[in-house]
Length: 384
Image 1 (cartoon, rainbow, N blue to C red):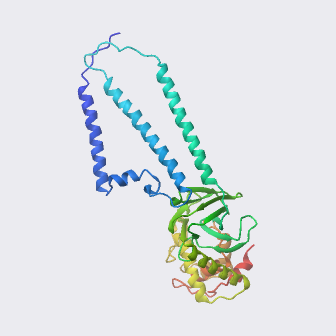
Image 2: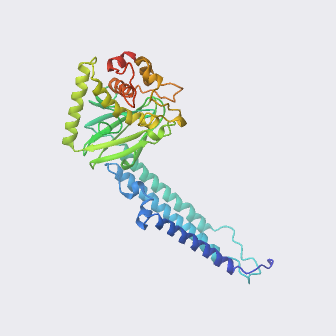
Image 3: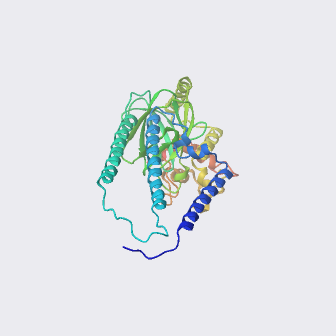
């Protein structure tokens, strides 16, 4: 069968090659201008920039990712290489006047492209199953913590044994800061129970190479051992509302000796507070602690200087009628929220935290509320 005449195609192939070369050159220039190096570009394809995880489970996850990545890279270059080679090798030339022999099916090729992908899928299935068993393995833990997620904050309850019947020894109500965060010992097995007070959240710390959903009405559990001391930052990784971006997690991993000392101090504080729930706190103590609570939980919306953010419906607290008004009204707002969730409920905070943060707002930024101090006992009495 003859074909209609056509113009030469040599210039078209040359133009395509020049365009590809230009795109590559511009990309390299832009990356170099941004400070990128070949190593940094390569590492950007891997979790935490190829630095590796810090738990006993992360090695298996990293290994699985590496194998999947390299297989994907090999397939990409093989397929794209064959496409480009075929396009140039079998392109129509000016001297071609007849169609080439038409091939309809090739048993050998069809068998190959069926068997090879099947082997790859079965191999990855087996490897993924093995990795999943490693990540999900339960161990006898020295430390049991219940991480409670609520819009838009984490709190951490330290337990005296395995949930659900374990007693709460003490609670870390602040997710970040010098007096907050999830504190763990290095080299010791840890079990984390995840619980949600409202919507679906997700516990995610990049250096752990692990993420798990926190589902209302269901307790998800995972175990691990952190192998390197340090500070590791994470974030709720499930879109849980407009302030989702302000729901961080800070994990502070201490030596076993420092952790034991810290845990002992927290137990003593919790015991002292439990011994006298009606203790009357000094206003300076409340305001100092309230500033920490405010910065960790409230400043993202109401701003550190209390000026608020009208764009997201967070009112200024400077001179606010609720802040300057009766204590009971502000306690109710903090405990139960208002405006259909624009101001979320903060019931997960302790009585001391809520009393402190209210006292802080009533004594800061020039506010001098007539009822300027709220005691924890008042918050306890208003809980329903």
